[in-house]
Image (cartoon, rainbow, N blue to C red; front, side):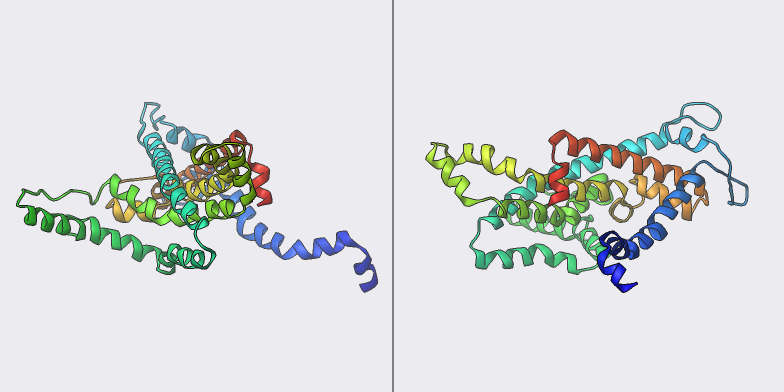
Length: 301
């Protein structure tokens, strides 16, 4: 038996991947399948699931009310989540790329320290970091107190900023939370660029700006795309940030799913929202990677 195992490479590979396959089947495939099945069910008066085949939950999410009328409340939640995820991802790219570029071009003995500073916030609990922004952004918080102090020194009137709770506060929290997940992939791509390419560009007469757009940016795009996926996917489905910084007033798809399962006791509708979120995220991710032709690079990287 052992001799046969040594000679059979296919069997060796199967044994190696079996633990991972079991975990994926038990913790991913089966729950996802149950979610899809439940999404076509209906809820009885007691909150239990009646397993049948009904598109009622999907029609409600797309704006068709229970009485056949138009009700776009859930469609607006989907669009708000999508728009907030796009805003967050765009801002994070604009902030992360210069910082990653700076770290990648720093002296080797300083890069570790800079990366350490980037990762330090991740050592603190996610919820604690969000509550820290509450202390900063609320009416009597650190930001307004600092601005009021400066206004007092300049002897000018000051009206406290009403930033919490609001959708703007949620956006700030999202950007803060997911910024490291964009910095690290971009840094990795920039660090891998062969310095001889910059020398070749200079020999061919390209200035620093042209070198950046013709050499650095194209070669670092796999990191940008990987960072975009690592940011966009969790942002569009998160609910903790919007619950805390939005004061439960900014409802996203993640909040909708959470409340349908825990508060409204309507698992079929929450499952349908989860499936719509999954399909929307998958479609946008596939389009984005194919649009830039970077799917193979991401897998290889």
